[in-house]
Length: 172
Image (spheres, rainbow, N blue to C red):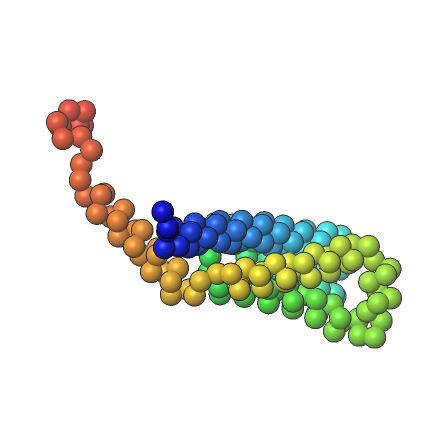
């Protein structure tokens, strides 16, 4: 008995979807952890320096850590939005470029002298790669919005029917 290959094709697509879901889950976890680590490093650097009102960097670092935390939480809690992944990659890339811009030609020396900076920059580089991988694997935002609209439309249709048709247990 011969098969036309359609069952094999469907199985291959299902396996491919599982592989993509596994990669997305892994990349999402790596991206969130890298963003959280970057936020923690920014806070650890800024916290002891907040008493110096002359230097604005600690205050900016606290804001940056808060923003990075919001991006990490949104990555965990939301659907797969390409714009969010681009925002995550861009934010972490700005931290990398900003560090190099601040220290200029002494970037390597400054990095070698500060273990906390090494941890932060490695986390940011890993995070950029993970967010870019998520961006590449995610469907266009319009597809995600349409899926969400379909899910909420189906849920709204069921919400109009009462659960208790007998009227017992009513407080009226």
